[in-house]
Image (tube, rainbow, N blue to C red; front, side, top):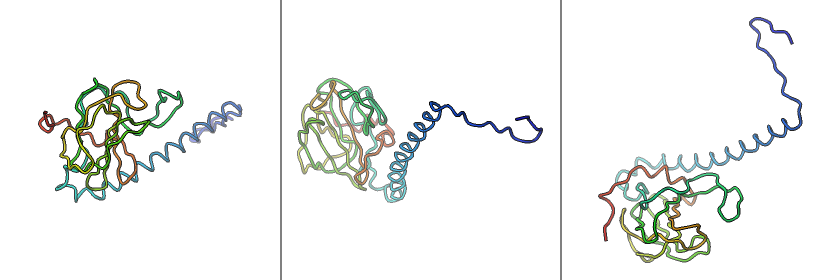
Length: 197
């Protein structure tokens, strides 16, 4: 097709079947990512709606790091260490030595301390405003169901229980029952906040 000054060039797509298959695969990934984004946007949209009411109850919003250590796995796609399959990891993992203190990231009430085949020793804490946090693969519990905890209080010790490839804390944040990226909430490390025992 000859080029005419001032007119856009029209370049036809390749008709190669392998190229068309690749386009299809990319489109499918985009559809998947759009769904993930939609869930996150809904959760964050709800968060935005409640922000004006949050000033007096900010201790109930998970906003500090749950432990000290290296972030060994973040929120997002990864190859599962046991199955070898791609999966969406809906948490953050912090690696450190067995016995490293684990702190609650917001004030709340302990709703569960249990052992789960996958999570190992697990603590669940309910916070204000529809938040819940989960702390997994613990070595031991320092709280009981029904305990009221303050932001920065030691709730357990890091371990290697359940399905685990080494000592670490698996940390989840839920907002009205939907898992959300914890990194969006971890805006500071406040050393004065943590309880020393």
